Image 1 (cartoon, rainbow, N blue to C red):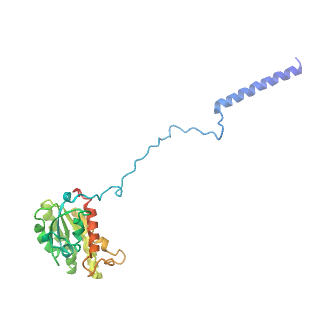
Image 2 (cartoon, rainbow, N blue to C red):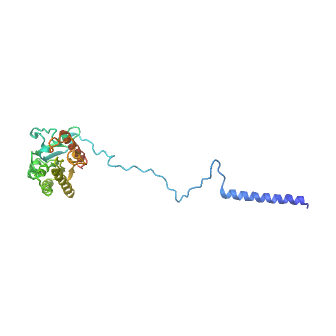
Image 3 (tube, rainbow, N blue to C red):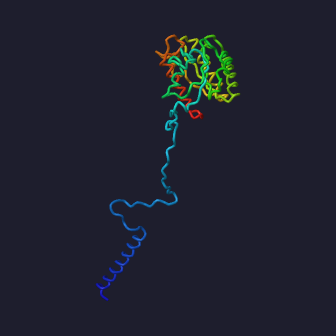
Length: 263
């Protein structure tokens, strides 16, 4: 055989070999992708299906402060001093804007109906403890106490104040009436205001132990930096103005609408 013929045979063998090599590579790697790099398949062992997560409701999302019609609101008995009484004549069913509970009874924005008001100028928590049965006749749906301002004036210690509140609590508990206790408004004199702060702290600690709900009516009236009253909320350093009384009732109403009494 000639050298020329052997050359053609050798070329044919090499061509077949190259073809086999190209086919093997193609089978191992799969068809080439056009238009971009080859994307490697994800392992099914680690793939996790994406499931939409329902948002969790927060307290801000819930309509806690919905208003009930007046006829469906609970009957509240009030026990207090001149800050509760204002210049009201409850014998005639009148509660004026100088009383902090005025806003609680509003037909549109209120949260309770009026059962009774047992309150007097200059009265202490000791007097209130002695009047608790009068305040709860006839039996109301709840009892709200705002007391301690005159105790502070008399420099009565916080344990005495909470001791009187405990007498009120036991009386209310004996007839199944839930008790709500307010914090005190500030005072103009620094020494008296320091006693207010101490009494309010004692009230909150006592209430936490006994499951009594605190209506923090004193909070919106206090200067958070300097202490004492915020400007314009009192004219005598002791009693709230109608504007301040409205803030007190607003704070109380928001808390009352969260209680499990259908308020």
